[in-house]
Length: 429
Image 1 (cartoon, rainbow, N blue to C red):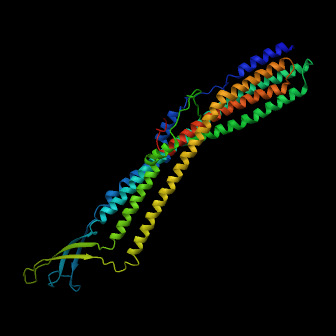
Image 2: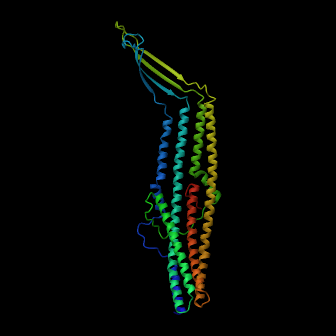
Image 3: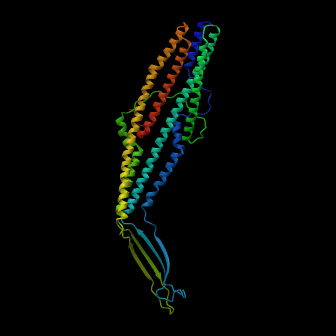
């Protein structure tokens, strides 16, 4: 077998390796990123339970602002136990009454206000969970996209190395090659098989995670489109993202509503020094005397109030408690704001790094690696490059192509995380 024939074979194989080959035909509908996010928002049970909680919280304020239900009573007073005759004694009467507890003016409004703030905080929590869910779906989707590209590259490289092994064996058989070339090529082939097993396992795990987010069976097939938009956008400056998040991030607004609720509870605790009232009325009907004389019915009115004589042990301590709870909410807001800024900075830096890597691989490293392979191939033709270096240069090219797709996926994952950190999609220039 001449070197010219081998060179032509290698050229054909290298050309075919540049085309990503699929693992095997995949059936089923493609799951686009848009479809995945829409389905997650519609079907995810964690988001649904948060929405149900918010709806439950929204029903509380009107309950807290309503007066207590009135109490109706029925009684028999001064009934003689020897005869149980209602006409025997003048004081015997059958009565009915009604009473109503009336909190001191302003207390009901504060209770309703605190509940309304808590309901709004719960509503903001739904938005926050939705943002986090979308970020997780997008991050997982892009991970699967990268793994698909990596598996395709491994498959292409695997097919190419199998041909390399055959070429090395043929050269060895005709006395133009070394046996160690065959063995080393087989070793590289085994390494690829190991990488393939790892990537496929990671792909199955990622698909199970995505199915869980979409409320699907974990083992359901996930098929992604082969082509996506490869142009990475330009995002706003870090300081502008800070300003944007301060007003748009749902978790910060939830914390602010928590502060408002704590302030209302503090004001209510201060009002507990003032008494609550109980207003009541009862009507007693009396029977006629045994002689037939008519007895007048009796009407009773009453007004009572509680007296906070244990204020130092009760009301004062309640005010201290509510003060501490208010400070807790304020500290929680500051801590959350620090976390939000940290998330923005991390997402911003990760995106810039990944985007720069994409540009570097696309315009520098990958083209240079392809030139290296072509140079190695030319050198191998005239026996100036050994077979192993040729094989390893091709493997290096595939590794760089894999790293390109990894950086591309990481850039999109960083965008998803940055969207969640800022609290909205409008983060681009």
